[in-house]
Image: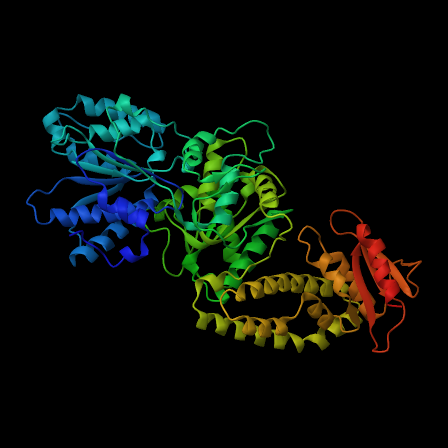
Length: 628
């Protein structure tokens, strides 16, 4: 009877099949798309093999090797969980060597070296990875076979195999015993699309390894929703690259296999992936800023919002392209965030042996240090630093994005590097879908009861805002327009979040309750009228206020002046709309903004206001004429 664990219910049929069928009599390779659960399958298979061996006297020498040090704790933890669930026993210390490649070699130098035949450790700082591999090969080949055999492994599992070079695989094979079937039991898990170091695929025949008849492909992504995969995959293969011609990451993506299995649709300007288990999900947001401090402030506010509404800190992951950038954003969050208490920084040497994801800790790191991990919410920051000319940068960007289980935020400065490419990809994938400042990520993470508490709290907060109306009106009458404009800009960003959140509520609550809540929040224009109590803002204005490509801050300053009854800037009469005047403002792109306002107060003591654009002025003036 096949042993089962309580975790098996959470595994897909594809994952369980591979986890239960991979055996040790020959080498075996498993290629999996991003998010297919390769590390979980490795741990489940290893735990089952260990459990089956418990009844035997033979204790094979087993190693599990990954390339990046931070992944090792995750693999070990999952293996121990599966093994305990199968056997009701803790995995004995030393039963399996869990390590990373450099750690394996360091272990070998300490355990197998003798005064007569030393094996010297090669520093990672003194040479390249290829130089180290060649030097280790030369040293190992000089050692007596008897000396080495005592330290060789019967089976080696390799996770994230695409990170290893051909010579590094040669080193691993030198550390393996030949099985009774005449083969080396190398169990390889990999995904070339996540090739962070731009390694060439090994020539296995030259290494004496054959995977013929012993290969599996994990075709289903269970981690990422399709919108996240679509954006990440198109940037990986350079579908909207500014440079002509295919990118050199096409070989990493293994397009041939994906086409053969019908896992991609290439009929349009962008590729639609077909290997996500969840075909719908939140649309990734791509945000561009003019300076780093603005991006950092935006990040801090978003993270504070999530934490304040119940999202666990460990379910938020901030990924930066470089170590220095990760450090810069960490320092910014320490200063700007009011909610973050503890940081996990797996890219730092002191935390390399710790799990990258720990309860209560917000993780800030680089793509290399969070491979294999995931989180509900992922922020890929400073993405302009991923250059569109480097294959390894595209792979790193792909790794970063595909850590997201629910929502993905991509941000950076200007439209440089892969940030601009991500913006173009998103525009093609979701034309007409506006950027949302902060979708309600907590709704996909928390149970309904907690969600209702959050909504109740936010409704109370809105009630408190109403009591601030008099204070804000006083500020306007005191001509403090800059302060009022800042308040209005912050309120507009909050409005966009609320409208997005209300739309998602329908998926988790009955329609009647959603409509009731939506009635409390109404539309963003209602908030502006609450703050600018002497104005009635016409509904057509929302088309300008909700456009993420426009900057409405100049409009807010003018609205404050109109609300206070003071007109310090020139205005012109609207020819066809008698009784109306026009003030122009910059939207951040050009001087194309228009504000139309009534020159006299209405019967209710208010002025009607319409916020428009130059390209819309003819049709909006017709609206004004009908309101005479």
